[in-house]
Length: 239
Image (cartoon, one colour):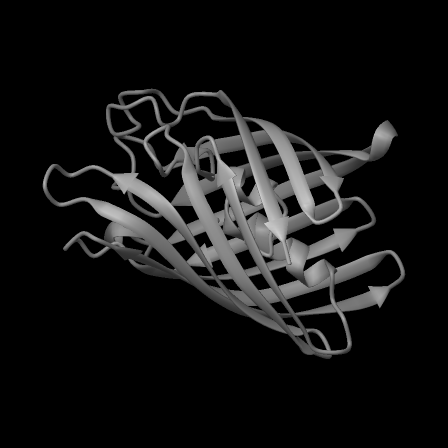
């Protein structure tokens, strides 16, 4: 269907985005952090993972040192299959980030998405990479067999961040979801997701509001409104 080192926007748009934050905060010395938060709707690549409802999320991140990092992140989800319902998602990831020069960084890594509560086979893995040029990020993720065994998946995306007055940040994102087969969505082999997230930090607390959406119709989106454009709110605290 993801920190998670995670700026709050992650909760809105997904792991590939959040992981770039971890990488670009690289330290030479080991470090450890814990984060917890709430979002009004957990959206991953534009699609609701919590049936449009509030979700509790938390993560643990470890900077191993010299650019290497590992972590895990968990969120409530709601994929309703009647009596067979997925309750939560847990991600495990690790990667390496380094600085090319003072204005360019890169990040490469691996992430495994695990889902619990249903007998369906929903787990999958991805490899990801990104380049950050000042405020511009170009990224890509690939899965050999995407969620619910829906085949190979490719995800190029672009992000741009603005620093606004009063210590506000505006993060823009657009991604292209490409499937090798028309299994994931009805008669679609690709779709676009996008978001605009306004956030502000109050010490260790990050508050955000986001506009998130896709170009998918309700019929193609599992006969739900999970893919419709919507406004979201979230709060995340890091120790």
